[in-house]
Amino acid sequence: MERQKRILIVEDDKHIADLLRLHLQDESYAVEHAADGHAGMGLLGDGSWDLLILDLMLPGVDGLEICKRARTMTRYIPIIIISARGAEVHRILGLELGADDYLTKPFSVLELVARVKALLRRADALARNARLDSGLLECHGLTLDPLARSAALAGMPLDLTPREFDLLYFFARHPDRVFSRLQLLNEVWGYSHDGYEHTVNTHINRLRIKIETNPADPRRILTVWGRGYKFAALPAPAPEGKK
Image 1 (cartoon, rainbow, N blue to C red):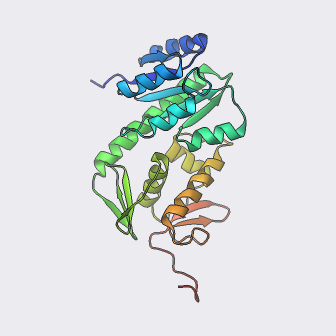
Image 2: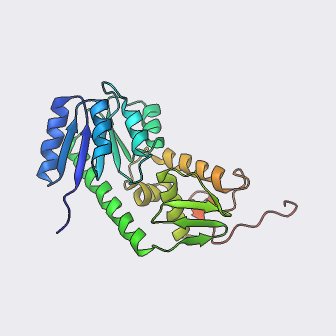
C-alpha cells in the first residue's frame, strides 16, 4: 500500500490555511499547519514531508529563509510559495531560491491542488528514474550521480542547486535533443505555465557559468536559435583560431 503523502502548510492566515487543509485532506493527503515562521522552521526539521506550501510574509522567520533552509536538507522537498507579493522580482527570487512554483494571492484553491498533484507526480517520477538509473552518468568531463544528487566536472565537485542538478541531469540523459523553454519547464519543473520561461534562461546561464570554460561561448549546453536548447553529445569544437 502506498504511503500517505505528507504536506506542511506554513501560513499565518488561518482562513487560507483551513481552506487548503480541507481541500488537500479531501485528496487523501496528511496535512500539518504552522501559523508562523518559527513553528514552520521547527516542523520542517521534524517531519519527513513530501511537499511544502509556504507563505512569504510570516511572523517570526521569513518564508524565504524557510525556503533556503529546506534546500539545504538532504531530502528534496517540492515547494509551492503562496504570497500577496505578486511583483515579478518576488516570483523570480522565490523560484531562484529553490521554490518549484509560485502562486499570487488571491488564487484558485483548485489550481493549487492541481499543482500539488503535478509536483508530487514529478517527484515520484524522478525518484523512480533515479532508482532505475542508479549508475553514474558520465559525459565529456561531467559525472552525475542521480542517487546522491551530486555532480563533478573533471573530478572536481560542482556546487549545484537541486534544480540546476535536475536540469543538467535531464539534458545529459537526452543528448542532442532540442527542448523549448516550455518543454523544459514541463519536464524539469513539472509545469508549463506561460510567463515562467525566464527562470529556464536564468538556470541555464548559471549552469553555463559552472560547467563551461567560457560561458559566453558554451560547448555543452547549446542554444538552438528559434527552437530552444540542447546538450551536445560531444563537446562542440572550438572555432578555428581558438584554443
